[in-house]
Amino acid sequence: MIEKNTIITAVTSAIGSNGEGIVRHEGITFFVPACLPGEKVRFRVLKVKDGIGYGKIEEILTPAEERVREKCPVFLRCGGCKLQHMEYGTQLYFKQNIVKDCLRKIGGLNVEVKPTVKSDLPYAYRNKLQLPVGVDKEGNTVIGFYAERSHRIVPTDSCAIHPKWAEKLIAVIKRYCAEWGVEGYDEDRKTGVLRHIVAREIGENFLITLVCTQKSLPALPHLIELLSMVFSVFSLYINVNDKDTNVILGKEFHLVHGSPVYEAQEQGILYEAGPQTFLQVNENVRSKLYNAALKSVIETGDEVVVDAYSGGGLLTAMLAKRAKRVYGIELEPEAVACANSLKQKNGLKNMTNICGYVEEKLAAVLEQERGEKVRLILDPPRAGIHRSVLKALLESGIPSLTIISCNPSTLARDLGILTGRLIEKEGSNGELIKNPAYEGLADDETLPGYYAPTKIQPYDMFPQTKHVETLVCLARKAD
Image (cartoon, rainbow, N blue to C red; front, side, top):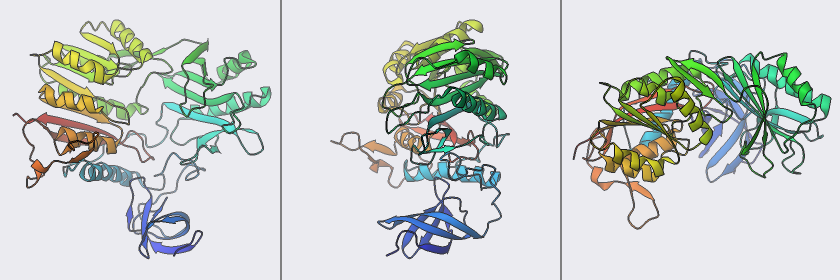
């Protein structure tokens, strides 16, 4: 029996789905962060249960060639970046394999996954910042990032994957809180005022939101003055969230300075975004991804395209420039309002934006466009595509689909259903099982009425982290 705090020296044999090293020792599989395959390491045992163990690195005795020096002073203490110790080309290969392994293990798909498309900026790429604000053991206000699997805040003054403006914003808020006694939120005692800082850059303009337990903050004119010394053009919102919840934003927004939304331009589309509008955090990779998505659905220009989970409508508008008609379906009202404004600004009369759940709105759109050359793009949240939407797609007869996914696990499940490799077990409450009809068929064979992947391409939207975006193109096999 290996006890907690035992020091083990061993060689890392592989790398796990979260970027941690895998060490097999005395019949136990240990997961140890910041280790690379082939490295001889010393690590401390943190926990062992049922043949699975977790460790903390003590020393790298023999480093791998792929190891690089991490840039962040809170690497491993912060719960964000897990791959800073890994050479960037190795990160791309790792993410390609993560997608491939998920598709095989979860979806039953042993298919080709193309190499990961890189980000031109491996660091300082994020256009959005989300920071919790809390208190330390002494009751002092702290700003930083959560430690992994906890709500303990690791204080930080900067972040390597954010541009310099994030460091400047943190400094301003820290100064303001210190000068005016603004307390961070204590989750245990339910005391304090400031819970989160949320900020986004839109075309060199900044949307800054302070999430608070109350509508007012002291000396807001002074805070605005401090921010004006750093940001030429910015908005300041107070968002009220007084609930006992892990959800960052409350429903109540108050604009105290600047414009409610800001405009920017991409690929000839003038767009705008507010504090709740969804946009990809990496503009460079977003452009590459959207270009590929456009090519996947537009061939002749007479297509009718449905953009499901359409956010602020940027991709929808790009599609409308090229297609016969386009529908965007999005749940968030503010995002739909931005999409409608975008439609008007760009004179896109063939663009229709629908507010609601995709599972409730999609069927009516497909029925309305029956007989047209319909194509569909889906960009779902991390939870994946709703089961009723998947069912509607299989029944629709749409010849091709394009999926943009931010979660390889739910992508694998959804593709398993769309390809017919996974089906619901009879009499179960949605439980999925392997489809026995595929037994004996080759990996590249697809049953009639289901979809076959024609392209699976990961994109590194989130360098230095374990996360990956994936573009999948599917073609339906005729009955």
